[in-house]
Length: 394
Image 1 (cartoon, rainbow, N blue to C red):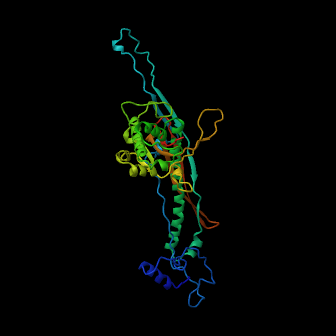
Image 2: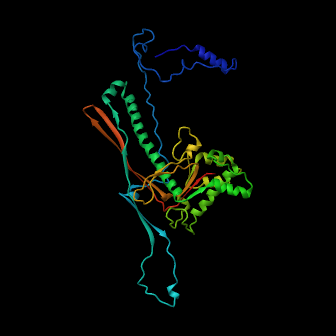
Image 3: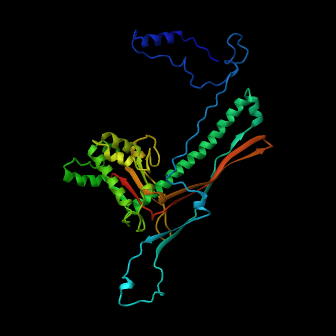
């Protein structure tokens, strides 16, 4: 153990705290350990005899567990999924015809064929993977720690790392499934460019338009724009949730769809949501959106990037193959300045099935091996409603 005399540091800090001297640099190296010590027999010895090796008095194995992402909008069970999920749903509501009761020309009532127009889709992909095993040489560990409690804490730290690796993968895959649904909304034309719509309204209302190339970060500082964006999102919600008048405009196959309020989901970029609440002259619009049962703020659609900038947080890049050409190739269409995604609960479904921990003993090396595995399945249903909101001013 390295022992330093720090009376001068303590006295200097006290003088600065009391206002007796001006603020000056304090020696942090002598007081704060940065964990860069490598144990050496020629240095780490008892301070009096210089021969007896220092003993580690206590071992603190620190670990934390990651939280699972909020899966309330996508989680499915094995009963929902099965080996493969088949989903049957009416595509178009049938038309009406003249009343046979009041018709002068009677038709044969037994010659009708059912005209129900429905789709039948099978989702069958299951992905399997496992964490890299935790390898624990238990005999060696017993000789390393002073007691079984310290060794158990160390093994718990290794297990926590394994669980965190699995949880991180689940969270990342959840975001990818949602982003696929978001990307398909772009490709199918269910997207709203808040920037161009705002600028068109600004001409009539006398507002200052957004400049070309404006970013989410810049647009969020304009109160008139954030109010317009909140109102536009609220207006779209009314279209999607009108249970008296279904629409073919908000899904990818032109099916007759509507969404109940209870299963409508709204994901909003958290930085933009904060700006809506902070910079708007009135928080009425934001309050109404935030009180939706399915409202959720997301820190970033895909990732924070290296800079944690809003430009990165609002970006989505998904490699996706669509179309029926003989040799389809994956396409990547980078999406920027995405601020919100409103969708039906059934548009995205995910399953984490048979989550398990496996352990085995290697007698040759005398090591305990542990790993975590599961099967994961995802689906995106283009026939369900979904609308993405973004900003693009050319």
